[in-house]
Image (cartoon, rainbow, N blue to C red):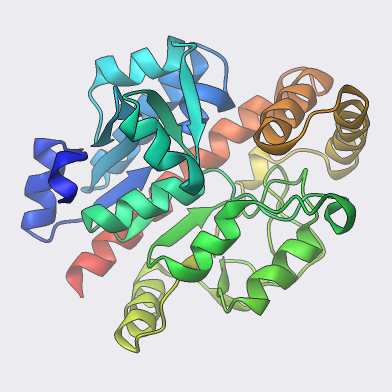
Length: 304
């Protein structure tokens, strides 16, 4: 049944059939997360980093209603330039597919499709979470529910620092999602290495991480696991600078009535402008770092 909706790139299919390491990648970062041509350059470099480590990258998107697991260079280029690309989470998938439209996948929908294809590791920049002021708006990312039920390990630089990180971690705890600090005891805050919040466990090697993930799923404990991998120290932003920029961006979002799926792109673009582009460079570097860890993790899972 799934075959009519999903198309797996030949090299990805071959790797999966042979139980080789594959790493899933989202496409929202290409279509909605960065300006052209930085978005395309970053996506291609992330794929190269994964290949250089000996794993196969599988960038996921929806093109003309077909779910694609693994994109060509031309398809990535198209996503980076096109304006008719919808931001697709769980609720949007059946509509974008059935109507034959183009869609860029979020963390939630990338996890769903990765699981469909049999991919265990997914690399992104930062997960979505509980938005600031959610006690009134109830604005909570679908990423968190997907992490609660879908068996995919998510390598990220924590949650986007525009969010309420404390409430995000509380939500994840409630639904039993393990938050592992890779080489850190503190939950990273996307642009910065520190947030003031502790992780559940610290793990310092991809081998140990793979063993924990394997044990979790062998025990029938469904749901994802967050591998919180801090941005490299030399690329992190000044804590005060980024927090001031975020506070100002949040105020502008409220004034302009940005809501729902438009909030995160609005805030990230606004923060980029307020930091003279420095936040974009940090964003790119943290994704590269996550790709490295994700590839290593996929290889260790393959060995098990």
